[in-house]
Structures are given as structure tokens and as C-alpha cells.
Amino acid sequence: MNHLPKAKPVPSAAADGTTVGEPEVASVASQRAEAPLYAHRIKVYPKSVAGPFRRIKWVLLTVFLAIYYLVPWLRWDRGPGAPDQAVLIDLPGRRAYFLWIEIWPQEVYYITGLLVLAALALFLVTSLLGRVWCGYACPQTVWTDLYLLVERLIEGDRNARMRLDRQPWSAGKLARKAAKHAIWLLIALATGGAWILYFVDAPSSIGPILMGQGDAGVYVFVALFTTTTYLLAGWAREQVCTYMCPWPRFQAAMLDEHSVIVTYQKWRGDPRGKHKAGTSWEGRGDCIDCGQCIAVCPTGIDIRDGQQLECIGCGLCVDACDGVMAKVDRPPQLITWDTLARQDAKAAGRTAGFRWWRPRVVIYLALIAVVGSVMVAALALRPTVELSALRDRSPLWVVLADGSIRNAYTLKILNKSRDEERYRLAFDGLPQARLTIAGSDESDHTVAAHPDAVATYRIFLSVPAGVRLPESTPVTLTATRLSTGETARRDSVFLAPRP
Image 1 (cartoon, rainbow, N blue to C red):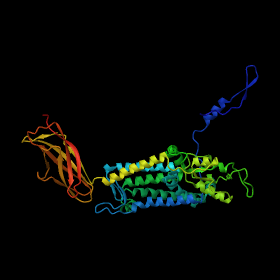
Image 2: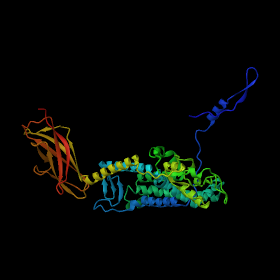
Image 3: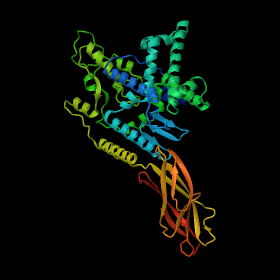
Image 4: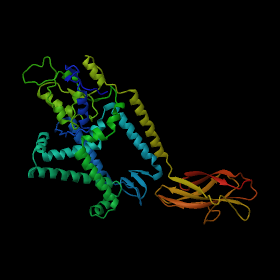
């Protein structure tokens, strides 16, 4: 609840001419009414830092960017007539290819399962190690780090960039800013172009795209991803993590007192204060209040204030603080990766270990195992042939000249293999009926399907005259691959006049 600040009494005239004091309630209310509802952004100038966590971030940045930009160029031989790009989402062909896995449109549930696995893995990692995804692997973090590297190379480190922004515009400042933004736009353009290459064949498409011969939709999406990359990584930066991303809002539900997070050891660092070389450390903490942990933070927070929504768990403040501790000859890890439970124990003079196995961790692991097992089993056992059947609705049935009753069906056989296959058509549930295929001999019940294609056939089921049938009889239509014996089934009904 918000409370009005304690108001100072001001003199006012009473009826008898004396003065009495009363709060400036109206004045306070008017000040609140005039206060802006929007707080302008305070630009963050992260300082360069060296240390093990910074090196880990550089390695991961290199690996992730290499994966993103190079994967469309990897080849994978799938046989004649099939695309040889290792990862390809072929929208015109209605296929998605991931190495040896081919996903058809009706198998989109595999993508859903993959997203569920990714979410559960994120929950698990967060419950164990806090927001390491945000600090090390999130695309916003990776591209922002890349943009900051360009900015430092052109404009200098933190203090130099701050001085440059305060200076009036000059030819030198304009040249630096123009060079920075030009490189940012080139990186954004490469990012948008690489994204498009996941949807087309990279080697054969890159030339026409660069020559301006691509489809309009290609350039629309390149422009879209170029713009979003440039704005989010170059301009928005930490505001994406603080205001736009929903993850900080519900990450607290994933954390507990046994989650390993970046934390300031207050019991050891306080009371803080400046320290001169040669003076005693007696009666004071190890923190010399240098502010380096704030200077290197990509979101500009003070980790000494405790857990905050803006903290992305990158650990750069750990590197900065360890460097300062080494200079003042104090033990490292004043800011460290630890759990709140261990910090409470240390503050009380006790020792405590890490507690990795907790109910939520077990639940996440179990869910990952179940979903992963279901997906692996579904991929291993999924059929290479599928059958669909659509019974004619007009007319519902036909009475032939010999009195027999006939129903017509349209069968679609999906051949997922890379070879042309032949199938034997049959049915169950109506022993008196006979099956014929339109355009084929009555005794020939075999059909062909081209590789990686859908074959459509029209078939008829006929019941001789005199056979009494209900209005609706369940039937099962089957297509059996002659080469392997694999069978696809589809349930339908046979309709007849009311008895």
C-alpha cells in the first residue's frame, strides 16, 4: 500500500486570528498528480571485464553464432529426389527435415513435443542453476554481447563511451557512430538472411537472393528480422529482459532456497567502505564499495541489493569482484554462485552442502523422461504408410441393376518412403461384400504409390441382393505394402437402405 509522506505543519489562520498547523495534503496530492508516469531510461554502459565467466560467455557466443549461421549449409544425403540440406523447413513441399528425421504436416505434434521438452529443460535448469539460460544462451543475450563487442571496438570501453555520448556532435563522433550502426545493420542483415536459409536450399538460393531475384516474401522476412535484430540487440538491450520478456516474471516459481544463483555474501562483505592500502580490515567487511559489480552488469543493477528481476545470472559481477579482491589481497568469491540456504548457514557460522535432489527437480526429470520416451517411441514406430478414406455422401448408396447395394469411397495412400511401392487393398467387417477399384480389373486389388507422395484411388464395396443389412455397418479398409507387409487401416461405414 502506498502511504502519503509525513507532511510538515504549515501555519494557517484560525477563526480567532491565531495560527495552527495542518498537513500540506493538497500540496502533496498536487505533486503526485504532476509526477510523470513514465520513467525515462537510464542508459547502461557495461564495462569490459576479464575472468572465467566472461571467457565461458565468449566461447558459447562463438558456438551459438556458428551453429546459427552455418547449419543451413550442412548437407545430409536422403537419396534421390529428396533435399540434401541437413535442416530445412520446406514450406512449399510441406515438409520439415532434421538430419534423418522427416516431419510431415500431419505430424506437427512432434514439434509440439519438442517445445514441451525445451520448456521442461528450461524449468529444470532454472530450478538448479537460476537464470543461466538468460545469461549464457538466450538469443537476446548472445546478439547483445556481439553488438556490445562492436561498440567497444569502435567507441571504447565504458568511460570512453560515456564521454563520447556527452560530447557535442563532431565529425569524429559522427564517424564513430555511423561505423558502429553500419556494422550493426550488417550483422542484423546477416541474421535475417541466415534465418531465411532455413526455409530454402541455401547453396542454390543465396545467389538469386543477393541478386534481387528472390520472392517478395523472402525480402519481407529478411527486412523483418533485420529490423528486430538491430532494434532489440542494439537499442533495447536490457529493456527486453526487464520489460518485454515474460520469463523474469514467473522464474520465481522455478527457484527455491536451494537453487544456485549469483549472490553477494553480505555476511562477509558488510559493513562496506573504502579501504586504503596498509590499513586494518578489523571491524569492517571485505567490500570496498568500488562499484565494479555495477559497472560490468549488462542490466545495470547492484547485486548487493539481493535477488532482482533484472538479474540475468551471467556472473560477470563475480569476475569483476574477484579482480578487485585480488588487488586488495582478500579472498575471492565475495560475489559468488551459491544457494540462499548455504548463505544463511554461513552467516550463522554453520556449513551446508548443495542439495541437488529436490521434489521439483525429480518431477522435471521424470516429465522429461516420459515426454522424451514417448517421442522416441513414436518416431521409431511411426508408420511409413498412412491411409485415409472418404465415403461418398451423395448418393449415400446406389442400388445396381442386379439388386446389389454399392458404396463408393475415395482412398488416399500416403507413401512416406523414397521408393515407389505397391499396396494390396482389402476390407474387414462385411464378409458378403466384394471390392473393386475404379479403372482396374475386378480381381486386381493392388495399387501403386509414387515415392514421398499421396496416391488417390476410388473404390467400391458392393453387397449382393438379398443380404439383409442394418442402415450402417462398420467396415475397416486396409492397405498392405507388398514389399514389407506393413498395413495401414482406416475405419469407415457401409450404408444401406432401411430394412
